[in-house]
Length: 146
Image 1 (cartoon, one colour):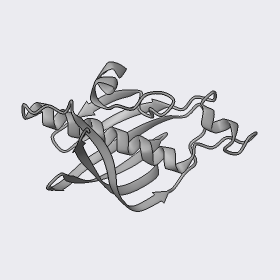
Image 2 (cartoon, rainbow, N blue to C red; image 1 turned 90 degrees about the vertical axis):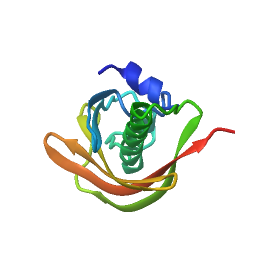
Image 3 (cartoon, rainbow, N blue to C red; image 1 turned 45 degrees about the vertical axis):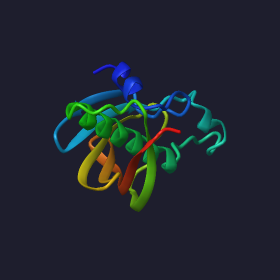
């Protein structure tokens, strides 16, 4: 699926967009991909000469992936997500297991667990070359835009 689906689903835009394309959406989750590019601005200051993708941005790629999933679930139910903004509400147990470097292509997964009101509890992971680079549990809320 094209990046148009990403841009239609969430308000994020470059240079703070960390999902290139949606690979698959199922009832319980979503899988996306991203190519890490050497010219991205974070590499100018995050270990110059030895660039490593910041862990917080890997987490953000999972959160953006999850937001796309939530929006698509709302749309599948006939609800509009146009006036909703995805907000991170909780982060639990982020575990970094491998470095992600410029040139790597990562697969990002987000899996739905449960909802409580406007809060959606999910888990996610980033996979590089078939191996898990990050696991994380978190909650997102979709709030009305002001």
